[in-house]
Length: 175
Image 1 (cartoon, one colour):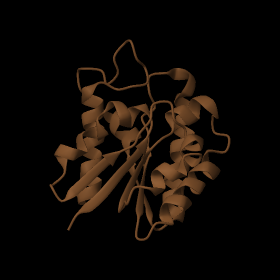
Image 2 (image 1 turned 45 degrees about the horizontal axis):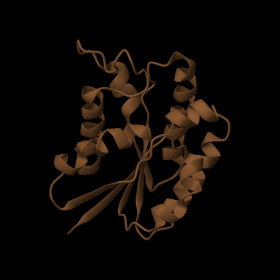
Image 3 (image 1 turned 135 degrees about the horizontal axis):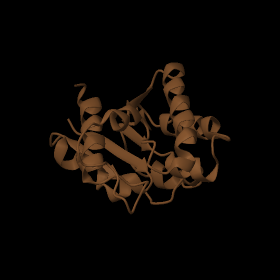
Image 4 (image 1 turned 120 degrees about the vertical axis):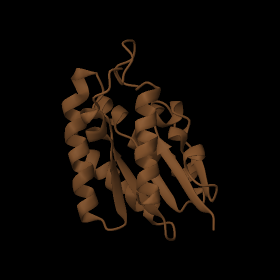
């Protein structure tokens, strides 16, 4: 039985080639990545038709870095709930949110931390929503190679994308 997964994200999703999930998951999983660099939750709310056109069993929502830069914490929970409600309106769709990496951009780290806490709390309130804990994976990383290149404090290197993809794979497969 085919399981359809759609990634709705920003540049982290777009530049990662869907976190490698097309090759990480068994063949019965069909992964579609519609991530757009620079997009916020508000941008996706304004482009509902694009999401609505894709039959999906599982939505992976990887958004928040741009929201932190554009809106801070203002309205993050309201916009996230609106997006979840829209995606849940599809028959039997499940939503997985992502706590996002804090990045190496110090000016938005605390905002991201607060927004990630909002995501954790939303999971407790909504039964059809789960989340993948990317923040703590990045924060506990102890490898010798930094997860961010010096030239880009927001977008992780291939090791960071691999950590994210593996976390998604485990959540999807229930490992």
